[in-house]
Length: 210
Length: 210
DNA sequence: ACTATTTTGTTGCTTTTGCAACAGAAAAAC
DNA sequence: GTTTTTCTGTTGCAAAAGCAACAAAATAGT
Image (cartoon, rainbow over the protein chains, first blue to last red):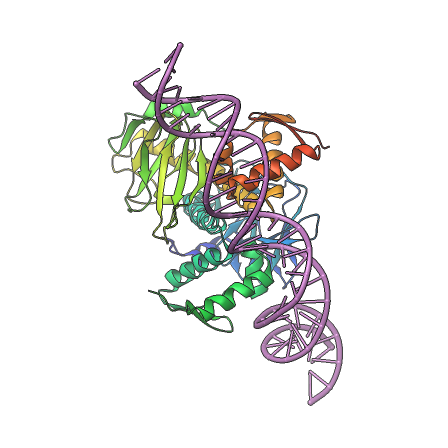
């Protein structure tokens, strides 16, 4: 991410300065938070990877969002309208700042340093989130599995400034993320290889078209 | 929308106080802005309806987002990675505040009232945007046309606090919004009627299940 | 190092979705 | 009030995607 401030410093400086903010550690596969109950919880992922996943009534699992370091998440950002399970699950060991807030303007009665900084930096963090969500929507609205795959590969290629890049998660998870059937996706990947659109070696992908 | 401040007052009070902010009027079907060039433009829709639409290389049109009053939009929120056309088109007569800004912290050299207020209110406006984008993603990740339709109807029902509600746009646009083929969607709507899931009269829908 | 679990790669079959095309209804334009 | 345009509703057919199932490979667990 291209933030104008140093997130590590921000976190280090303030993680213990406010009693409304907790730093917690989660092991792989642990549930970091659920979006079902409204607790006015707002989180910043410091280290690790986590996914926001939905389990619907048919047992389908969808990766709604994928978080890496400095990502913000929490049910504040979510108006849950369905009764599906919505969980944030740690994909690896995660350190998370958890912040319960009362009002949306992010002010603290004690007007502590953490909250001052938070209100200064939060618009940027949230703006970043909007950008990534917009990209997600752009991907999901693609009509075919092929377009979704190529769209996603383009994104990773642009992000890494290289035609070769590594998929940030397993093919199983990628299918969940693009909201397509895994076997159908594998079939499409095979075709993309056969038609020389891509080269693939494990999780390493190379784009072969201009 | 449930904002903690009065948007009309906010707009009225400040629309002419800063020379970096312009108020413009657009007729139906006019292009309000394009996302292709980076101009650091940020807009607030005051009145009317507008859509963010993508035209891909095959001529497919997708409604990426739908804006109503007090919605914020603009290419600030967007990292364009594809070379598809991305336009905001007025669906009806629209009044728009257009704001060109230099830095992300929304400060103005003159430190004018508009910018003070903007930096106070913006997090809330953007947070609202995140919420609506999350709902959009939730819809788009549904596996079938049926689930998308029912998901969307649930949303409108919840929003209107009623099992009966009016679709905010045409069925043609709804198909574009849910990113499905129109005829396939019509077929599914017919089935939903036949199976007594919904009652439909023009754009009025009534949910018949608990 | 061995075992258990998860992931990958593949395929045949079924179901869903998309495409193309058209007629009638509704809405907008004149 | 008439014409033109857009929207709705429908269908047959083609294409794409989903489902189920399985073996091989890779990874994680002990």
